[in-house]
Image (cartoon, rainbow, N blue to C red):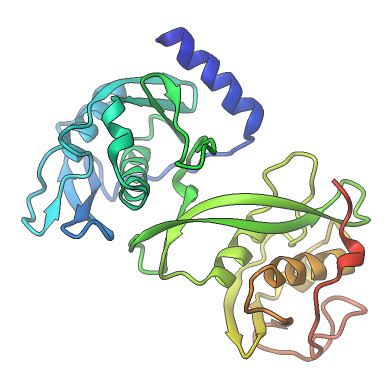
Length: 305
């Protein structure tokens, strides 16, 4: 099994260039265990004081909690009783968790929630920053045959309240710059996220995060934060921090602008996009494009892949 896991690791490393983001527990030895509610529609965190274990021993302890009944009778265990954790393997920043074949018996909705609960719980152990699931030592795939791949804390986008409510899976179409900054290249990305986060916000957060492919450039200046994003009557209003305009840009103004416009325009309800800086639509995006204007998707900038 160890050889098979190492071979799967090599596949993941080739397919994904990910930087993990570790989460620390609220206090030493205390962890959030993410359980399912009784309807299996959302995750709820319950505090747990560990035995003081570290490393793989701590991972097994947290997995045992996920498979045990929570203290709150209104919640249910995250890992179903018929699903066994058959092994774990840590390799650098990567953690592989192998499950029995019963894992595939879960409904797609429940499986996404279970996956989110396990990842968000285990990542707190600071043993790893990137997690992948296998079933009978085979890489986990979704119902349509798509490879699920590696997951980090950021794979499951949260709402502002820091609670995953009804986790869903969405495939986004994002536009980033080519290496020369002369055009936009499409990048598809599957993200697990809370159902109460808007797709417009999700797209903007993913654009700010940057491309997964090492062959593409990010388009949003470093330090930029999303203040708000609102969709009204087909117009998507995006309000960004001052850093968007003041920080050094690595790509031309036009590429940055239409990276946002084209990405948001992939959503069926978005016809045009208007940007604002700290709530103001006066002035320019940088030098040439007025903030007061509404911008439509620009297909001329899209490069063939």
